[in-house]
Every structure is written in structure tokens, then in C-alpha cells.
Image 1 (spheres, one colour):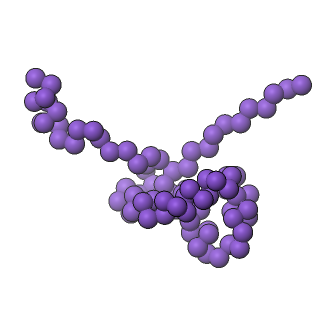
Image 2: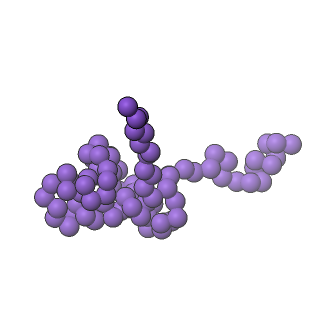
Length: 84
């Protein structure tokens, strides 16, 4: 018997915002959105839970980013002095 492996799908911020707009548009069931985007229900719920964070990140950075990471050392000069 052949084993089926699944790959994880990583949505960009733009993809997450498309999911939110689809839900806000008036889709009655989240199962319809799951089928359209190929996601599971828990992913849709997590996107809805973090709605404000996703929208603010989309407005700031557009569709370039996939994760919400900030650098540990925001100031290069400060990091350089710490290194010396």
C-alpha cells in the first residue's frame, strides 16, 4: 500500500486577507471557504481570530511577507556596539 504524504500550504498575508474577505462577503459556511482555498477549518478559525493583526500587516507590508516577524535588534548601530 502506498503512503500518501501531504505538504503544508503556507498562506501569505495576501492569501489570508482573501480568506477574510471571502468570509466577510457573506459566505454562509466556513466549509465552503475551506473547499475553495484547500484549508482546514482550524486554519480558517485562526485567521478569523487574528483578523486585526493580519489586516494591519497587510496594510503596512502588502503581500510580500508570509510571517509576522520583527528583528530582535532593531538598531544596527546598537547591535554593532554590543558586538564590540
